[in-house]
Structures are given as structure tokens and as C-alpha cells.
Length: 123
Image (cartoon, rainbow, N blue to C red; front, side, top):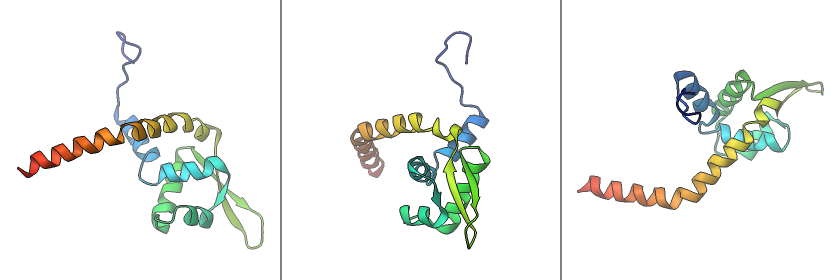
């Protein structure tokens, strides 16, 4: 934060990296699922049908590395792995919901701006 304004935040490299990992293409879907209940890998794959196995694996690893989710081995036969949101991960829900609300509210205006931009670019 700056000395002159408490609301001024600087997006330094560490912030950009973290936000890129938490708000990437698949993380929002994974977090939405895991905020509802713990899930096994294949349950997540079924819930997010467009994600590939590799992308889901990478997303889960990134979120786990950042402490947003945790991976637990479930002692069943055969042994299974379950993913769940951590207390830190639960704190992401409110700002993510705010961003989704912003996107939903402003999407028509953004689509119109894109249309105007694309039309001007075609000229």
C-alpha cells in the first residue's frame, strides 16, 4: 500500500503470479466444485467436462502448492485421493464471487466494447 492512499495496491510480480494461478482458466471451476464438497479426481473431471486430465492435474497441483486446496489419501480399496478446500481457500470465495458478479453485470458492456473495437479494426 502507498503512504498517500490506503486503497492503492500495486500488482507486483508475486501478486500477478498468484492471481494468474488462482484465476486461471480452470481454477474457478475447480474451486466452485470444492467449495461445495470434497471431490475425487474423477468427480471433478465429470463436473468440469471440458477440462483435460492434464489440465486438471496441473490446476490441482498449482492450487495445492498455493495452500488453496489439499489432497488427502482416502484409505479405501483401492486407495483413492480426495481434494478439498482449505481454510485459506475458503477466503478466496468472497473476492471470486465479487469478480464473477462484476463480470456478469458488465459483460454486455464489455461485449459491446469488443464489437466496436473489432469493427474499427476491420476498417
